[in-house]
Image 1 (cartoon, rainbow, N blue to C red):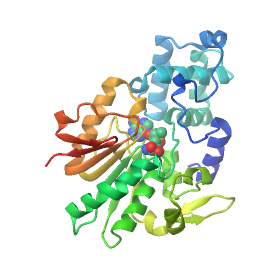
Image 2: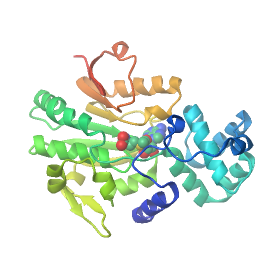
Image 3: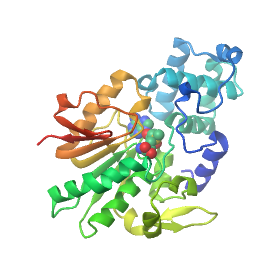
Image 4: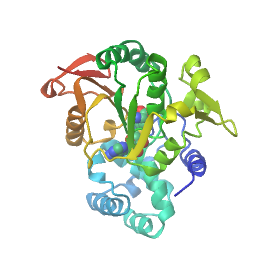
Length: 306
Ligand SMILES: C[S@@+](CC[C@H](N)C(=O)[O-])C[C@H]1O[C@@H](n2cnc3c(N)ncnc32)[C@H](O)[C@@H]1O
């Protein structure tokens, strides 16, 4: 198993993570794109995609067909243009031969950019409106929450901070899952996190819950770690083991094809208890919420009726 620290260094060096998801280059932001002459050379054909899909399924247990969006194809084209291979066929062969490249490719595919209190206005609504109501409903029990697509753990730890602040005496439980086991290693070790990943966290939470580690990196306090249980979970294959008062799934469904998005929202909806909340990303929309018995509370928040 790769050490958490070495994984983090590699991520930064090779993908230049700057706090932005890198899968959405269509608006001109994101990573530099190859010029048009090079794009055509590396352009993906259907047969290339299927070949790559077979390799990724076999080597990484991820079905790329569900992620086949225009953005994903553009990212893949950019990726190949930066590699030493000239064709998708030769690149796919290389994946089988070189486990290290397969690991790197998985990191690229899963886009694990995340940070504490990401999109601060939404977390403030959660802290000031949603959680007080949920905690009232579930009194005297602890809150049962699920953070899926939790990446490096910043999201479930942010929730743990808020629960400690609002109702510290109760036995809260946060299940956190991700398809990528390398990010889960970092999450379980509670870091190291960079100051960039903490930039949106309100100072009072930083003071209370963040601890300094080596090399200008940071970790979270042990009481938060005790609240969160991390486990590999593939939203496209696995079923939630139980129902939750709060389900958080942010900045993940954007990467799926429309048909798969629909399927994923159905699974997420089924995991929410009556009266519970589904918290999604700022750019995501749960279009069929009524069909699943939910009420729209405002951007990013849906409540299951009952
Ligand atoms: C952009 S990150 C979002 C992290 C966090 N939710 C946030 O908003 O800051 C997307 C995460 O979803 C994970 N992911 C991708 N496909 C997944 C799947 N099928 N099941 C579970 N997690 C998945 C990736 O590994 C990555 O860590």
